[in-house]
Image (cartoon, helix red, strand yellow):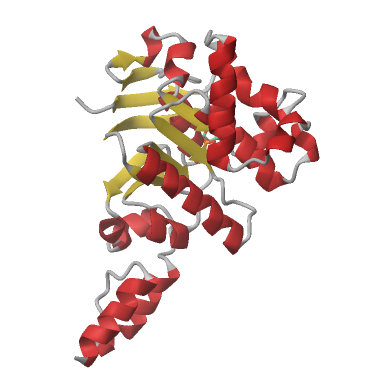
Length: 274
Ligand SMILES: Nc1ncnc2c1ncn2[C@@H]1O[C@H](COP(=O)(O)OP(=O)(O)O)[C@@H](O)[C@H]1O
Ligand SMILES: [Mg+2]
């Protein structure tokens, strides 16, 4: 059995808006996944169903074998963490320390261990020690995002879903965030699910892509498979990464079409010269 198993998940909001239809997927521990698709396609709703913030209208979400509908939220958030798209919707404590301690306290972790977890999470996200005593709103957006991630890490979930961390950041900040999340995946073994619109980031960092369109999961595969599938790309209105577009233009020179990184492009040129 996989760590996360979603079976025929449907979800409608209380006002009747349908947001997910017939979504089935599974996730193993240690995966690096990108969840992509147009605005309104259902990415955030799916993410919230995975950590028990929302319950399926029908179908099921199983995490570590536990059905989300029959599991208290305190046990769900220990397994799947969800970092909100806008950290300001998640942060509400008077200091960063209390913010990061909030989750563990809420699930009944004893105070000495709460302190250990705060220090561990602070260290992982690289938040300077003095900032722990600051009000989150006096920090830069980048640091607030780190606090939001630390608050989730302090619950020590196996799966961490980060909703659009690169939206509104410049290219260098985006790469920094992604290198940090890749470290969580490679060094600490977390399954990381990143929701993003940035296909250059996806091509560079993800091993697996989940593609949403019109409330449905329309594709699930490697970046090479997805970016090579014109029909999926068109249905989801996704433009391929710049490097893949360049490879397509250079096809006449014998460059393979499935190039996903600068390194592969250089390799293809060097291979062609020999
Ligand atoms: N709180 C809500 N109440 C009603 N409808 C919502 C709510 N949140 C999202 N929706 C609708 O659900 C659908 C999926 O939205 P969402 O999961 O936010 O997509 P994405 O994250 O891919 O942009 C959209 O039609 C959206 O308008
Ligand atoms: Mg969203």
